[in-house]
Image (cartoon, rainbow, N blue to C red; front, side, top):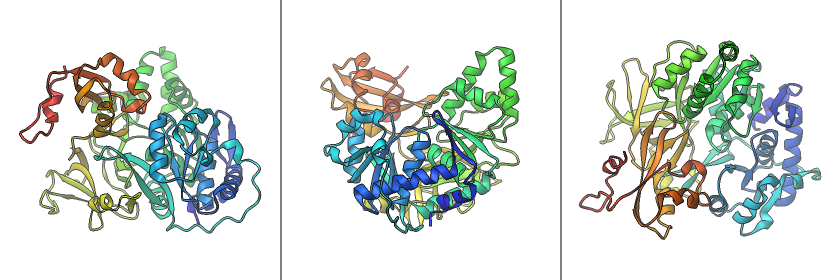
Length: 489
């Protein structure tokens, strides 16, 4: 039995989701999800495997996700900003027999699917005949979320219902979710932050979930001013933009917003390092010290600053319930001393078990039962962890996204005017890191951004370009990315 759906039966008459189209109860959510499940089974049979869905954030998104689960399928969310080329890769990599989408994305889906017969609009899911739903267990696969790896191609992280349920129980306990909570979700719905930490946690606990398909600082300010919200979670870039918005407001409007924020019980920042300057500015404005936490697609959330008690700026806290962590040195020895850096290993029922159709990469990602995060961290004398960076120069964290530099380099090299290129991360207070590309050849940097729009998601397009005669390499021909970073002004 699926815990999140089973628990919803206790909240049937409570409001579950609020979006631009209206307000929906848990009973309406469950009824619609069952209808979607029946339609899926009619078109693809029970247990249809991976089912892609391209749906804006809102009530329909949740009903499709739950419908896939009730049909015994694996829910594969597709980012609404992805170009057709990236979506086509997901279709091919998953081998999906079904692609559900909102008809506003028809052109994009048509371009992505070589076999358009697998694609169905949400309208085509209506009026399905009554069918028998399969028995889905906690051992069955629930979701596949794609994350960029150092190979340059996104990998499908397969998460079972057991792992999802453990993640939700862990966060529910640590952050004391309850039926009285109300949260606004403005994050993308193809990553764990918006999908698990906000959406699933809220619905798991009978809370009210407000969903906005895009981030609008004025709307966030208005909802916080209302005094109805109890929680807010976002990436550092969003808090940076909210600070900028606040500074432009009239004093009386600022005071009304601040009064609303003081009534909220928790604000969380994650998915990228939070600059201390942003934390301090937000604390001055809101009265809240942002709770920083640490997680990954493969493990859910692993570390968190405390809900009650002091939060250390620059630290991501201690292990969450049902999670074990350790630091390991380059000789694979466990580090017991404080303030000694090492790679962060994580294990527990929150951790995924495999990458989709990548057994060798899955094996390399584990050391026994421990998942190797690839992040370097250190622990202080009180047991709090601080993330120092990655053990790879090819992962960029920008605006809450984890982005493969190699993937961007591979796309850039398709341009006829580029001979060589190197993509690196530059520090940014607003974005955490910004993407920069050094290129050799005749390509015009001014036109590259436009050229990339049809080939990469907007958040993967470099913000800085630099033409150079040569790229620094070592004796083996490997790009020296630390030297390349110094080329940028």
